[in-house]
Image (cartoon, rainbow, N blue to C red; front, side, top):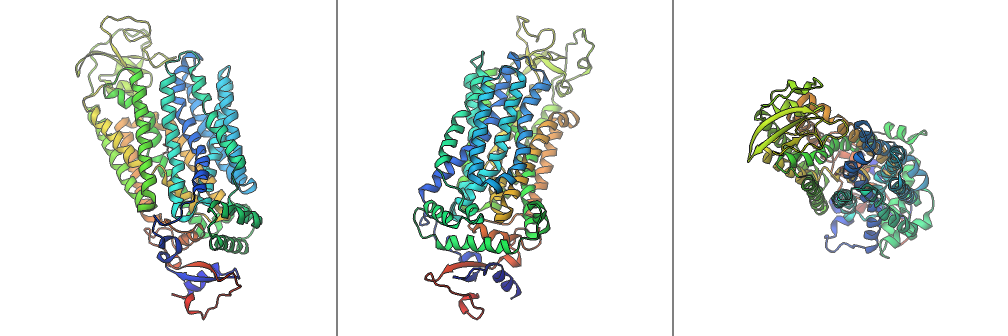
Length: 607
Ligand SMILES: O[C@H]1[C@H](O)[C@@H](O)[C@H](O)[C@@H](O)[C@H]1O
């Protein structure tokens, strides 16, 4: 009973409505069969224009690998500059995602999306016109700032304008656009890799098209009604909500949002910065742990390493032609994209929790398969049979097989091939200005060796590479529908309005910080643990993630945003079971527009 009272106290602050307390299964949206639930077109339009932010996130993070192949030759970039141009964007995204929380609360979601698309456009222009590497770096930091703001604002905006029965699907569309952006970027990379002179300018500059489209779209699109209500602009909020819901009766939804905001205002958990209030208030603190944990485990399961390394994996499997390898890497991003589509379809069918659990389990198993593939390749690594005189007396001459040679970033494997048979192999230093060639000898640039030796940098030829290739496809098939989109989707729904932008800013920041950490450490980890060791490590981390999700992620499917806070009222890790405080919740029903006051004696008020 005390739970009931607490629940009622929590929600019954609005006169003019009466509260009905009932189990989650009874609430309005779940009673409607999916096919009968209204699907107002306008909300799809909003989701599309917002998700262009996701597209830009995917495009700008994905396009750089292809651009770098041309850039490093044209601008003579050394390893440090290449690293800077790739990681600066992700680092800037981390910073701007963290500060995006404040901007979101202050300026609103719409203005933040406008600011992000403006920054994307400016960044794209800087990049396409850059006369030197310093300006390129400025451009890459600029787009990173846009990505950070977009990555935390767009899911929040979509979640706030969506009706509950479509919310998971629509927010997941943003992730579909991220992987779509990565896929289109790889196709553009492939197409413009033939344009040796300035091809990179087109690759980097083309991002201006979607950002301009988004900017003009958002000039005409409305602000989130929830944010408007929070700012006391109730008339506008009512109008916007009714526009978004296609003229349906919105009174009930409007009242629920308003009541919850009024309740939040009464119970602001003292003053001070929002992050401190989040940490002081246990339900939001728990939600923040779940949100940040999900984002951390998303990156720790190694998605960006696998994507980055996919070109090498296909080379290892025997595709030696550069162009073919680029197109096969595009096929990898296409796989990521197609399987995210599966996630969009599944999220409202099986729910967030089951989807994430199934995805993590499959991701872990595929990582183990990848590791086994690398282990077998290492154990059967081709021996080094030639030991040419090394003028630099480098470490390369000390290795007995390809495995040790390829793990040393300063060396590469030069060999001849007859079917699957490797012969006349040597380990020689890599050319410091381009890893495409050896520093000297048969595999160096400009050497016209009649027997056409093959230069393998970062990989070894292996007859077990099909296991690795299979592991890669399996990994994407499991990761993309669940662990890819769910951290973004779940974060957009688990915080109450007052904590939503700050909560999302923190969790998006965690995502970007772990993205930089994992990508920057991968080669070093591989150097110390070997490739199979690195992939076994990711397997272990994915399994830890599985335990975390199993223990801590509740199901949010079908609930109103205002109801979700209750899921975190109980202890943190309750294995997805709703806490005792959350299995009753309140519905607000306007009774003929009258000022109906809830009464404790009213039989309809209790179960
Ligand atoms: O959800 C996205 C998506 O899965 C991308 O493919 C990945 O590159 C991002 O890091 C991730 O946040």
